[in-house]
Amino acid sequence: MNTRRRFSADFKAKVALEALSGALTMAELSSKHGVHPNMISQWKRRAQESLPELFAKKADARPGAGPEPCQVGKLTVENDFSSLRPGRGKEPCPRTCAGGGTTTQGRAS
Image (cartoon, rainbow, N blue to C red; front, side, top):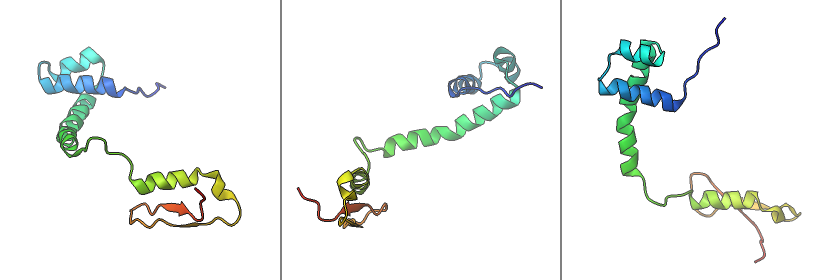
């Protein structure tokens, strides 16, 4: 029994771009790359469907956008080993974030 062949994303993109260019037929691309024409058609369709999203994400992206401040605080608290001492609990973050981050009580500066 043959094992299932797996193709890298780079290879799929290269073949899909060749199919989108229209320079070669599906049969020619199939014999050139050793892939069934149905697979090439699927990769081509996925590439066509995802192209508008690619450009939409670029326009919506903010430069320098990082994690939300509450999430950073939550990660800091989770990694803070001084909060493991007895008598130090956690209270909800005063900011209104979707993540509902936490801060430690009674932290000495």
